Image 1: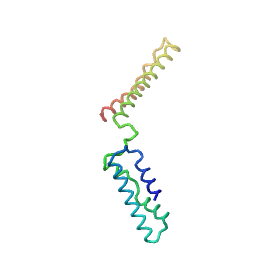
Image 2: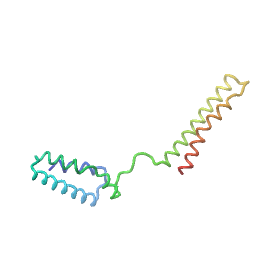
Image 3: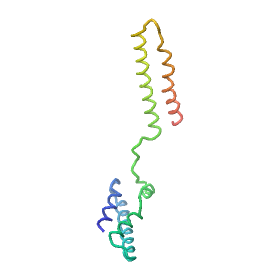
Length: 136
């Protein structure tokens, strides 16, 4: 039954220690152990019964969500992501516009043409701004 104990410990490794965690781990361990004994009584070998019990138990994500102890998502939420995208687009547009200004004044200072691509480039941060407003 050591394999079951190790499996239950692995399922709960990312949850902070508490009395509730230990109580739930013990309950799951006992349920799995009973399932193994039932399967062995039906004629299964111990190793097969342990594996079948673990597979049939499945994932504990639903249980974690129910208990409010699910680990936080590593992805930033939509609002934060939209703000990051907006900032990136603003700085990217500034750098690209600065490049066009430099090229314009370095290679053809008599002809001011950098204004035309600037209008096209400004659509990028503008669209990110409206996306950020929509999500906010």
